[in-house]
Image: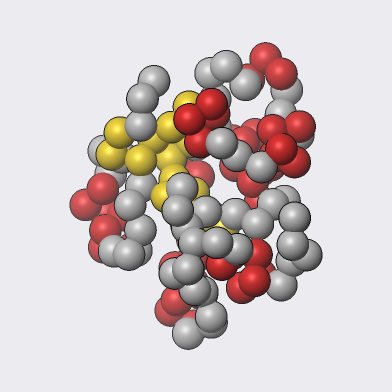
Length: 109
């Protein structure tokens, strides 16, 4: 499956206009090894992810549930957390390199 715009893009643009969500297979997404290790190997071939790769934000509604859970343990942010932080005025940098990790206060990978 190649990357393509999420069919829910109008709703997603209302929630987070600064992000561009697309659907990816795991090989296309180049996710952190820590997230991939947490997955059952049988899922690796077919798991899908709806995300903004540049900002490390994913949409759990269109992502494999096990993959979404694994990403929560990494520097990635779930869409709802991104939106909540923006609404509260909590620092969420649009700098894609390490922005979620810095905002969450996690250790660098």
